[in-house]
Length: 359
Ligand code: SF4
Ligand code: SF4
Image 1 (tube, helix red, strand yellow):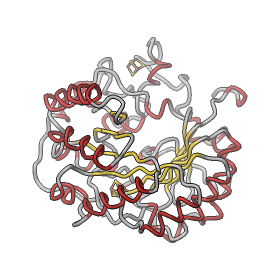
Image 2 (cartoon, rainbow, N blue to C red; image 1 turned 30 degrees about the vertical axis):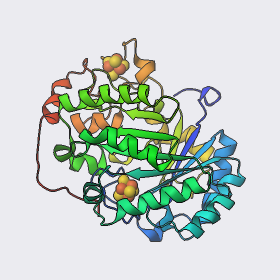
Image 3 (cartoon, helix red, strand yellow; image 1 turned 45 degrees about the vertical axis):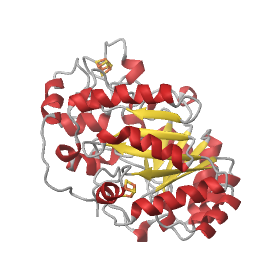
């Protein structure tokens, strides 16, 4: 474990204000076992968390869920994040924010809004979201955001059902007035892992999508920023998940548990501390979960002696657990992993029966 003085400082806080959400996306990053409303932190708890986060060096608060608008005290929460000096980004499904509430959020200092769009076509988008009429409501909210001159990001999660419409989704984001669009391939944790064989694109589709994104970037340069999250089952090297475990960000669940990443609770023997009992700095520096995979001392071969070990940190611990049963294993996405073949076999599984929706 590095000495406390040498620890990196986090820059981002993902605040999961609630797990409640009207939508039921089959790739939702929330855990399979959702936290209940009764155990949620209060607005006052969040005020303390934001103050402690700012003191720790955090610059951005990503207010997420579930659907953050399900919180009746969302305006107070945004105000306290803003007053603690954090840049505030609201990540919303687009359901539950009226124009009056959006005005109140803007007045409370909300800096940025991110709206998820499930597809460029209404019927498919509503089918994926598991909510009739969601697509039109998202478009309406996007217009309200842009009318208030608030910066807007459109987030599109890509999978087998919509991968052929990336160009149309980028065009929709432009039409809605977004300054940035995120084309994010599904990451297979939580609900997405349950639905992997229904969501996974083919290798050829993923390659075509990568080429298409490059050409769209060239076409729309200066008009909209296009960010992409790659489909790592078809990669040769893993992503540096979260920029490295316990290096750049922390995630606070609705009930106050602090996680190094949103899927970390899938690793069964980790001990997570709560903001109800510990200061955020204490959790960042000393909690067992944050120190479990920090740095490189925990690594085994082939990572332990690999030249890339401080670039990708051995990949994703949750993915290593999900695919090999061992959170300390090399992420099997890496071609040097003895389990790499398993990733290719799993990516080839197809099932076109209906989704298991998040409920
Ligand atoms: S991914 Fe879908 S179901 Fe999950 S929180 Fe976001 S909008 Fe709700
Ligand atoms: S062996 Fe480990 S450190 Fe090296 S590239 Fe693969 S995952 Fe990264």
